[in-house]
Structure formats: structure tokens, C-alpha cells
Length: 274
Image 1: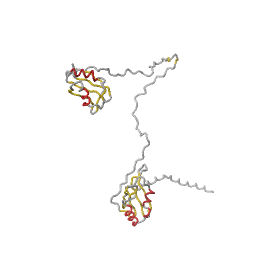
Image 2: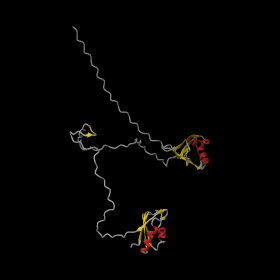
Image 3: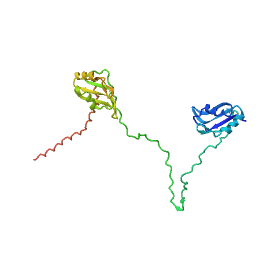
């Protein structure tokens, strides 16, 4: 008689210690094994008792008993049959699912035959002729609108000369716009202020302010560098001169072909009179 019990319908959180403690009420437990895949329980396992009488008592007492909120199923485990090397595997318990034959949606038409559906006579459909193999596919185009190609990215020149009227402000609040940036430098004779933005319109957190002269520039740096704006300490320093933007060459217009004027035709000389 087998001393191993099969336990099914286990809670996925049940541990081997809890299962062994439950079966210890029926006798001495030798081993507990909960089958798992990786770190997750599969919901069943095996408990091996020391004596066959304890295994039989476990089946009668523990079957349908609640453990961790679930009624477990307990039965004697079947002895494992060792398959000799090279022997074929036994057939599966359930036959595999196989798809049946596929039938055409409409019955095949015979040339010249008129089908009859529900007592009504319908004209026969013309036979389709084979048009030959399909040619190669054409080029595929994107479904959405094509994006305009980006131009060359402008990289700031680290060796550009320092500006005498322009300042660079960074660590700005993302809600700050051009007018509010100009308002911060209002007392230093602001000529223009610009916050750098992304293509979607959101601020990039830095900007440039153009002032009237070098004195206003140095005074703004001394007064506003490290000042808290919306709980952010902004950084103000001297900006570098912006390199000139490259101008795309304009193609010369193509010469217009002109036709030569026809040569004037000389009038015939009058005939001499006698």
C-alpha cells in the first residue's frame, strides 16, 4: 500500500510547512513537496507519510478539509511506473484537438448548370478565368502624414566671444513665459526676452535676455543670480554671441530663351521707266 498522498486544490499561498503541520495530525510526515513552476505554486503537491496506515487515515480525515480558505482533495498517490529507455510514450489521456476539413462557402458550380436554392431558379455565375501570377508589390508608403525633414542642428560655439548686452538665464520654472521673464529684468532696461521652447510649445527651462548696455548686464547678473523664482534658484550669467544663421544660396533664375527677330525683307526696287 502506498505511503504517499496526493493533495490537490491547494491555495497558491499555502507553504510546505503549513501542509505538513496539517498532516502531522494523522501520523509522522516524512516529506512534503508542493509542485511549482519557478516561484509560483501550481496548486497541488504530495505528502509522504512514514506508515501506510497513516496515509490511509490522512485520506479519510483530510479529504475536503479546509486549508487556507480552500477545501483540499486528498487521495493515495499512484505508484510511478518507470518507462524503460527507448520505449514509446503512452497515449495521451485526451485525444488532441484537430480541425475538421474545411468546406467552401458556396458549393462548386459546374459550367452550364443552373443551381436551385429553396425552389428558386437563379442564373449561373460566370466562370472566373485565371489571370496569371500576381506581380511584385509596389513601394509601401507611411499611413500618416510625412514629417518635414529637420534641418541641421545648430550647436553653440564654445569659443564664441562673450556678449556685452546679453545674459543667459537657466533653471527657470517651466511655467515662465517671455513676458514674465522680461518682468524679472524690468529694472535693468530690457530690450527683449525669449524663453526657449520645444516643438510642442513647452518650455525648456532656459532663456536669453537682451539688455541695453554692459552696465545693465553686470547689474542684472549681480542682483538676480541665485534668486528664488517659484522655489527655484535661477542662474544668470553672461551669454555668448550668437553666430549668424547660414543663409541658403538662392539659385539664379534660368535664362529665358529669346528668339531672334527676323531680318527685314528689302523692298523690291522699282522697275526703270523709259
